[in-house]
Figure 1 (cartoon, rainbow, N blue to C red):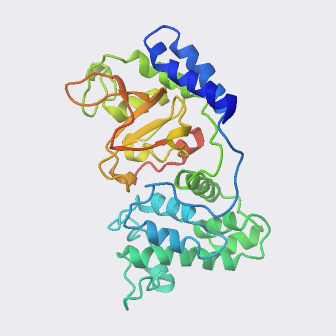
Figure 2: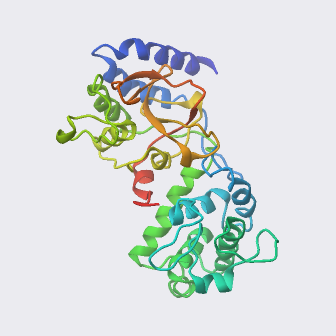
Figure 3: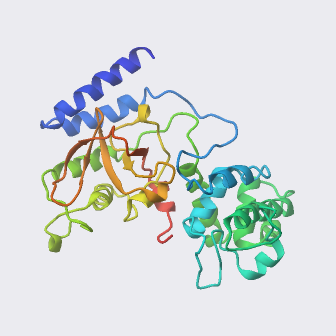
Length: 339
């Protein structure tokens, strides 16, 4: 681990002590990039694994298995599609009559729905059928456009959105804004559902987000608080993190369990100041996350804990620690407005 590890320990150990002083924010600006430069890695290859807890435990084995059905997809990409379509809600129903966790319309289900669990029926409302059907449909689309130049996954996603004919006609992702955006969104969200295989780059906006949160220390908690004047400038946990990142130009969703999908997920030993840290009573399911704070180094975060408390520094190493997200601008933009 060498000098980089020693330097990191020195910095994070000093972080909390300096947190109470005027030099804290400047230290963070330097420290984020100093530590970021010493995180091991370069991008790694190989099959993608799902990030811990990113898919509800009931569906994770199905997504992991069927996400490897063909080379054009992987478990993280399949998870990103399911999250984008329904937020993993098996009872989701859209105004366009799309149904279930994978949001199949009846005509597409009639053609492409499969009996994924082998129980003798094809039930669009059963994730054990719908998730395998989504993977199978992706792979069918990929086979239709296999001779089209370019990235096979992007061509598959474009076919999902615009139809295989359009991809064949344009010999790649067609010049439709909606289709190009769909491809960008899913491939960006894929990074949030994949376990990192190497270095996760630090966020340029991290220090600014911490600076904002630091100014709110001592502010009383308010359930549903967004910091508005009508609310006396008070916040709840996700209201604080949303406002902190909005102050540096990144718009996060309102609730903590969606904020978890705003970027890749560094391990505990790889945390950098500015990472969002999450807490849950169910450590297998990111949809059950109930609390979020902003990591500041040295094992501490700034958070709005609960009714009757104030925004303060709290330790992160508790039994309900779920994981962390390194917020990226692209990751935040890719998140659906409703799931």
